[in-house]
Length: 63
Image (cartoon, rainbow, N blue to C red; front, side, top):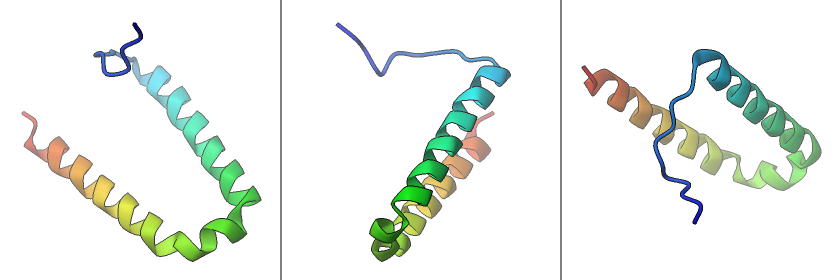
């Protein structure tokens, strides 16, 4: 069975490749579906802010 929650160790350049892929996907979706997502922009900004604040909290709490 495929476990999507297993622990994975990635090197810095592998993380960079992953982030570039996500950024490219985000730009493609934003460019093509901008009129669809325009009504939900505040929701997505709120979700992004909450996620980033949580990640910042976890990062600061780690030793």
